[in-house]
Amino acid sequence: MKKCLVHNQIFVAVMGSLKQHHVVIVGAGVTGLQSAWMLVQRGVKVTVLEKQDGAGGVWKKFANDGSCVQVPEPAYRLPPVERVLTAHSSKQEVLHELENTVDLLRDAGADVVLGAIVEKVNDSSQSVVVEYLQAGRRGVLTADHVIFCVGGLQEPRKISYPGESVFKGTMVYGVGGEPDKVDVRGKHVLILGLGSYAVENGRECLYRGAEHVTFLARSRTRMVTDLGAHLLFRGQKPAIEVAHNMLSEAYERCSVTDVMPPEIQEFKLKKDYVSLYCTGEFRALQNPTTDAFFVGHALGKMNTVMGEVAEVLADGVKTTSGQKINASVVIKCLGFEGPQALLQSLVNVTHMHSPIMIKERVWFFPCDSLAKISPKEVQAADEKVLTDMLKTPQSGSNLAKVHTEIFCYFQERPEELRKLLQSGQLPYTEIGQLSNLTLAAGHVATTQESPVLAKTVQECRRQVFLDMRHWTLSECLQLNHASWRAICERMTGNEEELPYIWEHLKSQFEMLDEQAGESKTQLQLQVQCTAKCQ
Ligand SMILES: Cc1cc2nc3c(=O)[nH]c(=O)nc-3n(C[C@H](O)[C@H](O)[C@H](O)COP(=O)(O)OP(=O)(O)OC[C@H]3O[C@@H](n4cnc5c(N)ncnc54)[C@H](O)[C@@H]3O)c2cc1C
Image 1 (cartoon, rainbow, N blue to C red):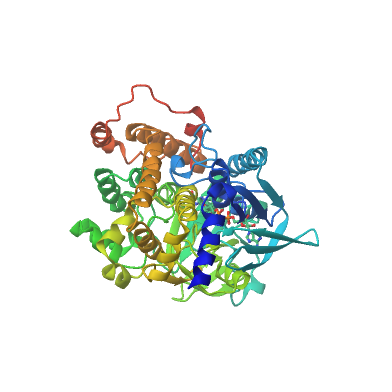
Image 2 (cartoon, rainbow, N blue to C red):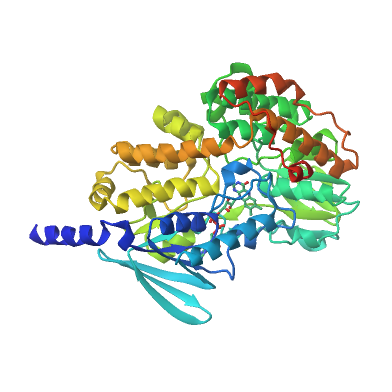
């Protein structure tokens, strides 16, 4: 008992004040840099270790030339936040901004070590020891905490299909610039998959002159339109309702009803939100956000086939249902391996406490590629947890903000953290298997005993919603109309090729703006937004 008391006293002395802390952050992507920025602002000594030779994470490693931010941009603000907002920033803009953040971090006294691969982490009650390899030399850092910000997309999933060797066309993976090297002009392109990368590749192929794009997908993905995402990210009930009502309309008006997920059909009939999230598996708000998918289908330049590859032929593929799809270019967009293997071997444990704690001194800030949620899990979920899940903006920098706040709170209150970890209230999940639901359950359990923390997290989320008001919904509609025209222009050469389908929402959006107290007279539209489309 005495020993324990002495130990606790030391613990409090070492950890009570954030300013005396040294935190090692593994990963210089959006999450790691956002957290590093917030910690440095609070006087924490920060070392960022990044295995690539530059900052940017997945944007540096896996983005293609035409990659751009999909979600409404204010929800994807990167540190520091003073930049001018544009819509759908390009890969180059995102990387430029993250590199800029590294300079600012260094100016503020943080160490950002590039080309440093973290190989082992050993923790004790006193400290954590991080071993890394840089340019063939071993380095060791002793710190108070390590936070893994290693992302959810470690490596593209690689699959080979029977008959690939007889294919006479070009077959590539849809990441890391591979598809940029393929001349698709005038060709039929087959894209395997229907996630964000698949949709992005389909869009870019049409922009680069492909004749037609077919998606071959194992399951129906719930696509979100650009405007729908703006509404969802507002976090206000009336706006969220309009977003949901737009779901089926987008599929119907753009001739994509044959691949409309069943829950959307059901929602249209019942207007029941639980059924929307209880039919079929889903990953909450992490769905591909795209107008190009709808425009491409409406123009007859895209189609989607449900099924799987059974065999690759010389001039296309045969699906498991026997359908033949002709193509001279095949692009594989088959998802990514998650971080579980990496983290489990680095820290030598298999499970973590949701949302972000592996051990007292070892944390993991998850970002994307969260596990799917089954209807059974949703039905069994606590009402509070469901509400929390549906109102949390998911994009990278926002999650990182909330998680850094939680981290800071507990560093100043180590006893509270220990009590929470021992209480058994936090969901205990395999590392890499967090879903939005277990994440939300973790958020609820973490904050429910502490009004101060609950308020901090709420304030952080409120700020995100305030950021979202950079444009009124009426302005979003105008931006979207311009973007819709630009998509048509890039796909067909004629911006008027397809009538805009959301004109009728104008008065509804004005009403929503009025209700939310947003009635800007001066439009803040930026010229480059009109030219950008995704
Ligand atoms: C083209 C593209 C568009 C996207 N659009 C959106 C969007 O619109 N909205 C959205 O929410 N998300 C989007 N994403 C998803 C994106 O993954 C996240 O938004 C976010 O960038 C992830 O950041 P992260 O820092 O968590 O992970 P990552 O970017 O994966 O960064 C992790 C870093 O950790 C490093 N690392 C890993 N292991 C080690 C180790 N052992 N030692 C040292 N360093 C290590 C990696 O090298 C990497 O740099 C997009 C991604 C891409 C590529």
